[in-house]
Length: 188
Image (cartoon, rainbow, N blue to C red):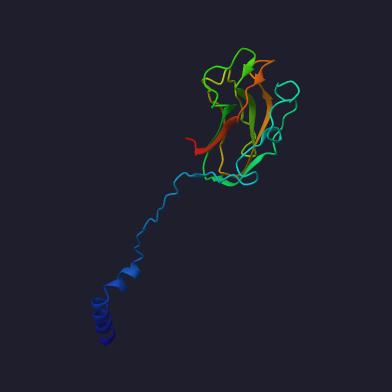
């Protein structure tokens, strides 16, 4: 009898002990969110500037665009990543001599077109070819590449196929400047 009384008193003062013995349980859910994000690293090798033709675009004997122009190597962007589907956009602007005002005389030009190519992000190769006619209203040409998995890679940008708008156009003197803009963003 003493035992039963002792057990009854213990059960009255320890209700948690009684619950544990019946097998009751509850679940607390733990959640978190990872926001879709992309990081485009800064340009590494080449420091973000292409020098075309060693700095001289013309054949000094004819005044025409030099044949076989090339750059000082591709620009590389190391350390870029996206934790979701992504789209890489490559936008190219022609090289234009902006200090020459107005249209150049017949047979002359103040713009140079080229092809920009991106490699390394996915299997496609975005290619943007500029198509400026006069240098008066240069337009941006772009290409995109969509990757459907999280990705981390080195992106390389290279320039090729330098041409003037007219087949026999001479270039006016001055500095010619263009740009290639790389954009990396999550895609939905």
